[in-house]
Length: 208
Length: 208
DNA sequence: GTCTATACCGCGATAGAC
DNA sequence: GTCTATCGCGGTATAGAC
Figure 1 (cartoon, rainbow over the protein chains, first blue to last red):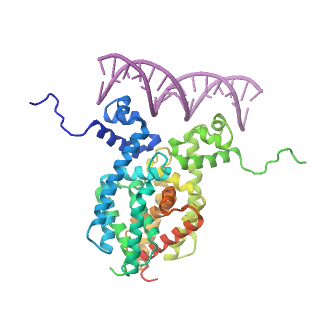
Figure 2: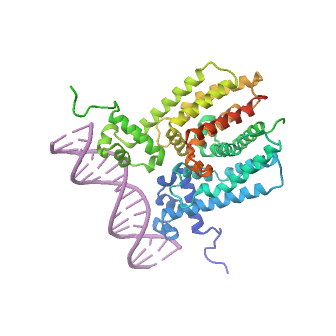
């Protein structure tokens, strides 16, 4: 019962569009991306694309929604692990690097959205992430009270950590020129990840 | 000998355009900014603007050039100061925070350029900054050899520091929502600056 | 579901009057 | 140095055939 053209991959046109849109928006931003770019990348015409999503803004919103849910999922898994003290912090940092190494486009599109102040987005990004920040801040406070970590302002610490992890990926094209290598090569990502982990560990824990 | 409308400020139309263009490009990016937006902000028409700069790209280039030269100038002053060991690092970090607190738009436009991989720029941004990175890396290596600082990879350290300083300003609209305050208020900037300084100090130096 | 054709708008840039 | 007027292009979005 073989058909003439069997569907080799279960990827729907819709999913193909979402993948290509993520790539384009991350690469050139919302304003810098035309629906023609995306349609051409998928191999269809622009009107066909608009049949699936209705408008550029709606497509962008769906791209971002998929991104956010995957990020949260990873974060939840990392936080739920049985680990305490520094081991837990390291686990969350490395989990972030792992996700972004797989999907550097997530970081670039996130950063663009932060720069634009959420102009193209229906949802309030900060409001979504805030519960995570609050929970993490409480946890850090408790650890510092218990003498596990040196005392730092937890929220400021989290902002700095967020910047340290994201910057390497968002500014990769720029860092390429600084280190004269492709920043996104797995080895280079791993090296920077180790460096960030070591830095925060030195800052937070007393001995070794 | 008073004229009817004396020139109160020595700002030329050209400078007014550069200021407004910086604001717009930082706020909405290169693609997101139209020459109409800039002209309207100055109070002239688009053709008048093009009389001064010739093209959008040329205007953007001039905006960036002014930004770069001011940044380098500050950096040179900070580096030239008589200070050693940790005091020198702290001086450079605080000098960066001072400049960016005055001109947060510099950070936003820099970050956009890094994200875009220098697409709109004639000059190679990384090539310009690289001598600074190399010099700083050599200095850190020497200090670590002398036992002044704990050992870290100097280049990775610089990238992380770069990210820590810039992120607070570039993602300010997003951080606003996280801390429920305006991130760019002088007090909040100072607080984060102190936090970053304390973090790197704890990571780099042994005792206090 | 995908196509062709088209409406409509805003963009960057130019020409030429004042 | 600034204006009005206009060109040509590419953008999003819609209508309707297949």
